Length: 504
Image (cartoon, rainbow, N blue to C red; front, side, top):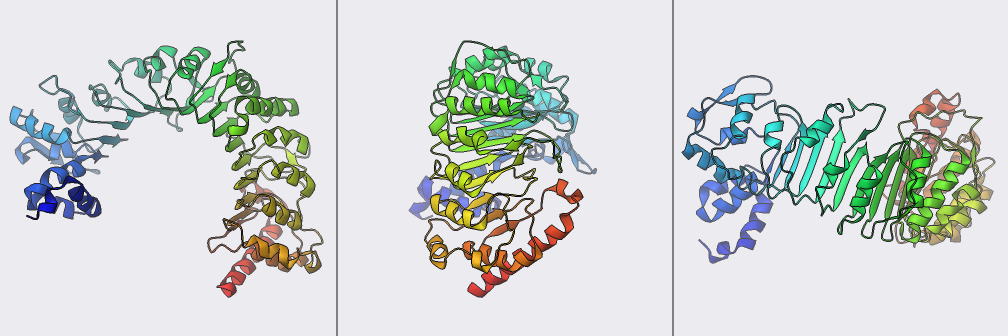
């Protein structure tokens, strides 16, 4: 054997290029030098627990020909067989199981009761599973090395007892992710008792979008020295308190709320000096006062450090033709100008949008690093836009990194004489990133404007991967003007693609 193969780094590089093909198993059988590191790689990640049965001698287990096939121990493993099993389970670093259909209940029971007190999975670092009666014995095994735990609860009515039943939670958890299956999620938010979260002191990430956290739990989380990612829900009864919350290390915050007041209360008393991403989803459509209070709170909580800002309505069906809706004006969006380092803005409320070129440029002047701009992407503007093609060109000049937009566009009376000067368009080719995505939402377009609008879009979309959407919101299918506008914009995109082929 060549001496180079005695160097662990070289062996690992070889194995990485072979994995996950069957050749990796061949390497295990070919050379002693390959055997240990190759076995480590083969067993590092499991999304099926049947190998824990199949790795033992055939006399110890049997296969039931079902769909999917089910493996079961035919007798309790001997000590020698437990030793064989341990030689493999010590290599497992990640387990991801969302059903146990291919493992008989008897097998799960045996695996959950090893003959010694030594952990069955001593080096397991990541565990993702559904919390079911079948999986419960495995979940309750000691996992001393576990740092990432992801659990999906199928039944929201029993999840609290499920949490309490964890006998000795792994002490070193860094990433905690808890979900309730969407098939069973009820209208009211589930809650988590503070004592469950307070058992951990060093979380880096906590993702529990279906669970409402109370003030005590948030206060505990705010003192964690390494917490960088937090996602949770707020109930309508989230209290008003004078005690401030200070998250010194938090970079990403995502909050779900049934109404606007709880989230505004939270933001008004919270400071997050290092935040870069803030996302909020709210079930109710806001009043003007509620929206402005929310944006003022977001500005005071994070302000200039926010790079990604995402606001959307939670599980609502857009109501197109909403003549009674409020109008979104520049003054409503002005608090967002405090986000001076903003790169991505996705803003969606079920309001009609009233913005002109000049007003859009006022907003964009505060965001020189902007890359992605979307306003009412999922509900549309429901009114004639005040944003013209020439305004879009000015926007692209003000924000040189902007390459994705979702805005309604005013195409009325747009002719070749209205096209921006060729020099203005030529300068767009010098931008650091080509314009690659455009969604014009529910923009109205006249038939006579199709050729010139196509020529305009072709002139600014010089990316080979350019993507274009129009009238793609599902609720627009019932709009009386859907078919004619969808067909006209489809013709625009066809012409844009043909122009791109000619350039190439």
